[in-house]
Length: 376
Image 1 (cartoon, rainbow, N blue to C red):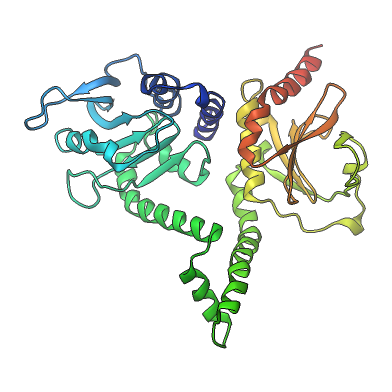
Image 2 (cartoon, rainbow, N blue to C red):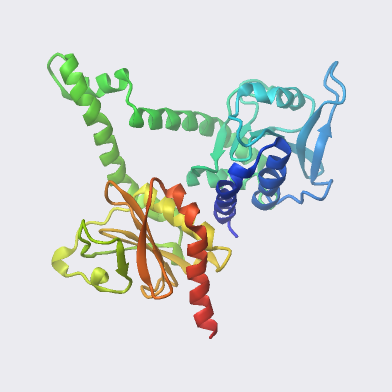
């Protein structure tokens, strides 16, 4: 599987099992070791690749242990310190990483709770671990743009020089992105005043500021939706992962039941109904989540996405008669469309793309049924 598929598969596992994990040791066994073994590709049972409870004397401290040391090329390259999955990560958790960083050959340190992985290096001072990570991977909301950099730390593609060369840029880009995300969600007074002052020539009174507090996040969202479509399609890759834009008519009464048969005239559209189809980041995230779920049943290359005016369809073999799911994300309330053995669609309300994981069993069952028919 690709690095993307491996990450999304682990993200699915974390989401499903997180609530059952109560200790740090359980976090290591359930999430951290699979990350090291499955995502990064190191053999967790080979002490020449993964050293658990790694010990190195640090000054007056003797016998201190770090949870894992990853070895590549005969040298310790990555240090990993793990905390319980329910514990939010804080810089105070990384005291042992700070000490070990200066007395080993490792240039990368990882602090994790099994769901969030913070990657550190020594950008600010040689052989001294930075107090801010250069890369943050959150399995609860995977940023697919980080995965190529993560791939450089895998056993098969280890490229430390490339990682370190990009670390400075990644560090500040990541911090800027988090600031922007916070501003888009809850604009600060400074943010609102900046944009208002650029487009409003008169005095910015409290009433005007209140108006722009609503306009600024709305404008930002519209701008991102308009700009993101081509980038997201490219990020999905070639072949079956490509998205096709297909016009469609919407025939669901607001007061009617949320059930509709697949393969009906929902796919039948006239030329006059053709409109611009914009693939949103939520649709792409949902598509990737569905692929991660059903990869246990079928090669992900057979799972295709096809965007339409009213929903994003996920299909087996890019075949309209083999629908796996529909992502109804183009309105205020989001739904996940799933299918029974007769291809009747049932729409399940969800709050965010990550909620798709709650319905993993029905998605796998749908794909398994198609494959069973193929073998019949």
